[in-house]
Length: 285
Image (cartoon, rainbow, N blue to C red; front, top):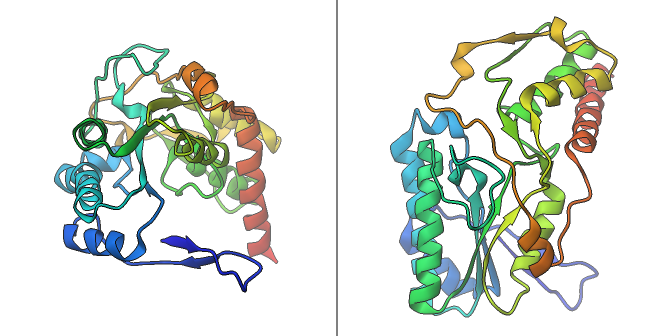
């Protein structure tokens, strides 16, 4: 997709192009056609639990897809800046807080694929002089989050339970600790990274932690419900290799791109629950 500035229109025009991260030729042709100033690679099979079920596909799209896109930039000789969506899952079992200098120890096929993509981004930066940066984003959530991801699964269930449309919420590891931020603010950080003269790799995070239990409790309390009455543990949702705690250290981002989050995880709970309540009320009408 790309934006085109139309001098005769009040707003930018938005164009959607079709391609596949498994199709190197199509990616190269698109770059030759569009000649973009900035490329953001957000494409991936991004569900960590699902990556254990389809590790080969995850590796192909999440890992090699990045390489195909970087190679398309190199071959087409497009003078652009490149952003790779790296992940806090790279750190895996390495104890928090995690910064740009923390060793990686991925604990899922998704994380391993992202690690490959991270180092290929660094390699193309060093080998070919591409302005390529890795944004190591910790969990970034919003009302747009897919319903199979734990935060949206919780807030959607809370809305449905409040409206009498659902009785129980089934979850896995309630003790997992995460650093949750607002995706809208994290996208701004992505953009800021590509406005810099020099490429770099940055941790984007709030530095504030909460467990899945904390998130669920806050969501239920937000609508006046006691969370213990509605949550049941289902072993199906446990990962073969768990990641206990991911808590980012965003100090370098604060210094380098002057970015600081303004929405904490409790504020995020309210934003997401309000959204799902509105959807539920719309269904009732």
